[in-house]
Image (cartoon, rainbow, N blue to C red):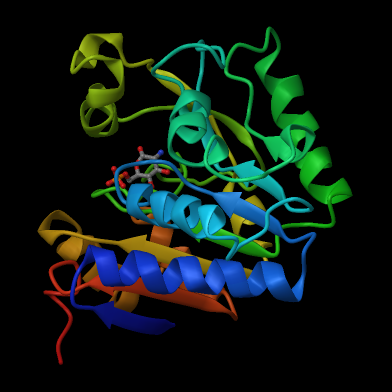
Amino acid sequence: MKVTIFKDERALAKTLAGHVAQALAGKPDLVLGLPTGRTPIRLYHELGAMHANAQVDFSKATTFNVDEFLGVGREHPGSYRAFMEEHLFSRVNLSPERINVLDGSAADAAAECARYERAIESAGGIDLQLLGIGTNGHIGFNEPARELVGSTHRVMLKASTRRSNAALFGGDEKKVPYEALSMGMATILRARRIVMIATGKSKARCVEQVVRGPITTKLPASFLQVHRDVELMLDETAAGSLNP
Ligand code: GLP
């Protein structure tokens, strides 16, 4: 697993935005997997700024977001769809028909998950999957559990995960949905290239376990160890528990 440590979040975001722009220059119809959360916000704004300076072109790209809350539609301000509109989609020239986010308001959640898997496949699979990581080691909404699920599925959220998403729901944890839809572990691991980003002290312990620990369903991100082309991009604080 390649680990790259940056002096701060800004340096990380700038470098990764450069990698994304380079990947798009090499393959304009790149298929990108995208995370939400606080961590990628700087990256998305950086890509927006680069786009404004004609340094990156998303016109032929396709995107798939990793997860979405169940029971919230795209207009709901707490939805990941709304988050993505605010931080990335409104800032770059993605074609709306090539933006894919799971529909949390779908009447049939299982059918929506199956549709999403098919859509990823017909797009040719994910070329570059960007990921964040939850403090409990979740990726997407694949929470620590005795068993993990391979394909896109409906998931029950942990109390800690709902708490850390409260800001999207006016700071009220009670308003955060109890369930979500998420790409599965296999959906994520099938991506040709994966870059996981983590910043801040709160991620240091789980980052250390992802890099050094055993592969375990108790820490879903540890499965990234089996992937051939994965890079962890960290700021100094998230890398704080890694030995020099
Ligand atoms: C959320 C998302 C994940 C994200 C993670 C980390 O619950 N479902 O996809 O990677 O938690 O969030 P943050 O970047 O805010 O720490």
